[in-house]
Every structure is written in C-alpha cells, then in structure tokens.
Amino acid sequence: MAEIIKQRQRVREESYELTLDPINDDKPAYWFDCDKNGNVNTDELSPSRLAKYNELIHDPEYEAIVTVISHSYTENAVAICECGNEIELYDEYLGACECPYCGEWHNMFGQHVTNPSCWSSGDDW
Image (cartoon, rainbow, N blue to C red):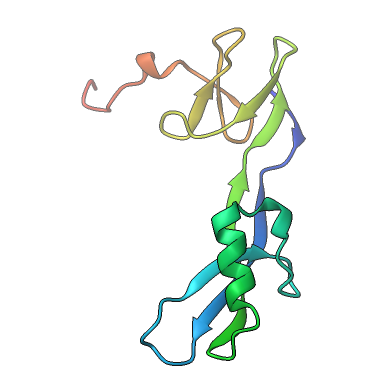
C-alpha cells in the first residue's frame, strides 16, 4: 500500500474583474482584471487597453462594477509508492492509476490493485 503524504483536497480560487458598464445600453461594456477593491494594475495593460481604461474610468456614462469570479477544483492526493517514489493518486482508469516509475497500480486511497489489463468483466465466470 502506498503511504499517503497529502490528502486529496478541494481548492477554491477567486479573482476579481472590474466592469465598466454603460449606463445606457447603446455602448459596449469593458472588463479589466483587478483586485478586490477594483484597482486595475495598469502596468499589465496593453497600450490600447490602457487608453480605453483611462478614457472610461472617469466617464459619467459608465458605471464601475467589481465582480468576484470564483472556481474550485480538486487537488489529487500524493503518496509514496512502494518503490519509494512520490506519486499522485488520480482516476486514470476506473478509479486507479499506474505508478510512472514502477508500473504498479493503486486506487485513489493508495491501496495496491491488480493491473487493469487483468481485470475481468464478470462474464468470465
């Protein structure tokens, strides 16, 4: 059995976006990456985006709205294989994965499993 050294975990990341939204819908809206307070890092903008930002940020026809963008994902568990190498445990095939160093297979709990090429569909009985 592989020794799990880091449990599988859910990670949530947040970023922020400043929308310069026209008060009247006859103009387009513009989006810029920002911090949680709506501050745009203007050093990262291309010259044309910087010009547009500077043009619209103080324009009374536009409203500045900060939006939180969040997404989450699951980080794989990490284990030490019986061969001594560190491996990630992930769903490569039906909940099991192969050690890239020694070729042994483990489930997502680190338990050793038979190579899937030897698995039976159950119809062989």
